[in-house]
Length: 284
Image: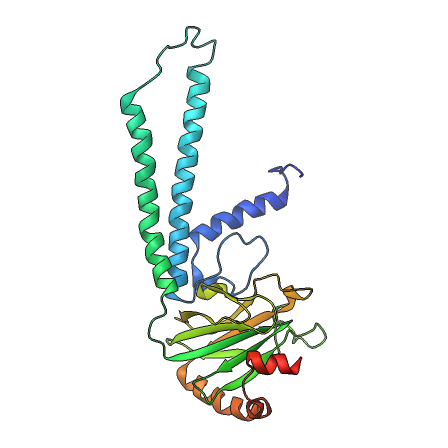
C-alpha cells in the first residue's frame, strides 16, 4: 500500500474534506456521495439525525482516547527509557491506578451504551404508521407495493447510461421512483422471491434485509422533501450493484396528485395484482 505524503494534493484535499465534514451540516451538502466524502449524507429523518449525532460523539470519544494513549506512550518512552532511568523501579502493583484503569473504561462503556440502546430501540420498534410501503427484491430489480393505496404496484430497474437523463447520477437513477409524503410515518416491509436482498436508504437511517419466505419490517419518517438514493446492500448475485432505489419525498398535496397519476400509469401492473412469493415462483 503506498505511503501517503502530505505533499500530494490528494492527501491535502482528503484532510480538508474530512474537516469540512465535521464542521458542516446537512442542507448545504449534496444528496448523493461526492469525491473524498468521509462523513454521512445529510440526514432526512430523526433516526438518522440521532445516528449522526451518536457517530460524532463516538468520534470525539475515540479521538480523545487515542490522543491520551499516545501521550502516555510518548511519556513512558521519554521518562522511562534506559538512559533517563538507568535504575528501574521494582513496583509491581498500584491499587489506586488499577482501580482507575478498571473503573474509567466501565464509565466510558456506559456512556456509549445508554444512547446506543436508546437508538437501537427507536430504530427497531415500528411506531403506529400512516402508510405502508412493501419492497420485494428480485434478481435484479425491486417491486414496490403501496398496500394502503389499492395495492398500487410497479417495478424499479436501473437506467442504463443511454437512457439516463443529463445530470442524473450514474448507477443510481431508475425508471420508476418511489414517492412518499413528507412528515409521514411510513412502515417498510421487505421480502424476496429468490435470494437475500437488502433495502437501504442511508439518509433515512434505514437498512433491512429482504429474505425469501420472511417478512421483515422497519420504518422511517421523512423530515424534509427531496430526492434520495439507496441500493441493495446485500450481495445478491452478478448484478448486485445494479439494484438502486430512488426515493422522492414530496408534500402531501403533491403525493395525492402523484397517486392519481400513478393509478393510471401503472394500471396494467395493478390489474395483474401485487407480486407475492407465490406469483413470482409461478412466473419463474
